[in-house]
Image 1 (tube, rainbow, N blue to C red):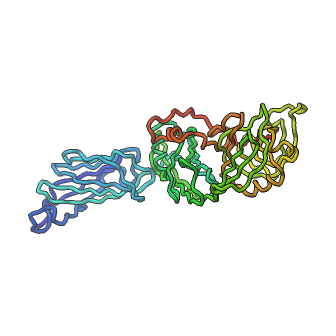
Image 2: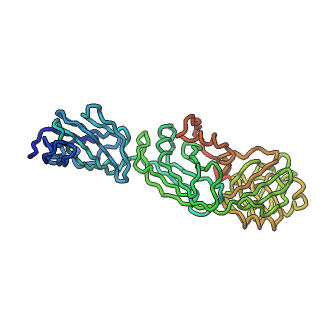
Image 3: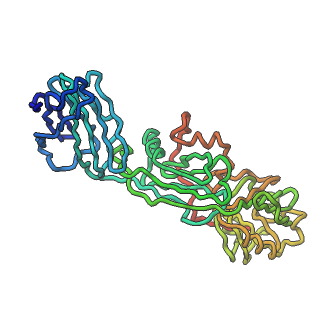
Length: 417
């Protein structure tokens, strides 16, 4: 049988209009139209828009229309990465339109299946590009590639603030964290530009964690589109936990759940009590000069100090360390005499310094101090209960209202002893 032009199907994207001539019947003599080979519905196709050959506007919906009684039976639209565009087909098959946003700077392939009034099946495949975005939202993941302790959170820093809950959900859906072995985890919005990811419990020892963003080209909102990002892979080492009982004046160090050392220590005296709770090691400094003036102690007062300190392991940005304190050896294991740091002998401090890595856990119990805050002085993420943590996800109902503030400036390094 020959094909005769009877119907037109029009596909429009932004100002893009493409008429399609469809045949009347399918080739072959089968009485079942579904058994016939679909005719080629791409003949006599022409671009009739003034935007012919130009990229389409990604902010406008994609629309496919059937005219003169033809019916659309199926439409799929995918980008080069294989991501589908959500859409909705009219009940009468006369049209289809996208309900999901198009990506900027992407190439799309649209496949349309149609049926004429005689049941003949036709198909049409069209490709088009969308224009690049004017404003890009980029994501920078942290920490740097390497091996860390099991307490190390993943961070995501955005290049522009995102306040709207719906826009946050768009961003968060594109951020992927995969670990081997697999663990349950969630993102938490710290502020408008910062997210942290942590598992429900600590990472497993010797795990591999892969982090990536699929945000590139995705419409976020307010004229903002996702930009490219660099994926991240980190690994974890042994599970090292240092638990300091400030009331007993001892630190117990565990490797993979087994005690490997018990160390007499001194912690913060009254008025300078060491913070309770879980802290994550931020860095290791073989030498630090510590001055009382850096934490507001007037020079010349009875509490003033200016000391060379060795084997210092940092746990807060405000200057709390685990370090060598040879001047307080007589109080270690018996009394708390420091200005907030955890002090120990030089030999023990050197051993601790050599044993731990960034991301390992330092937990303080039994102190008169307040509990380490989650975000404004280092990584206190683990001090937030899991259910409260999950409420900080834009994908969880009842997400708390962010105040838009930023974490404390990490450059304010105020060592204390």
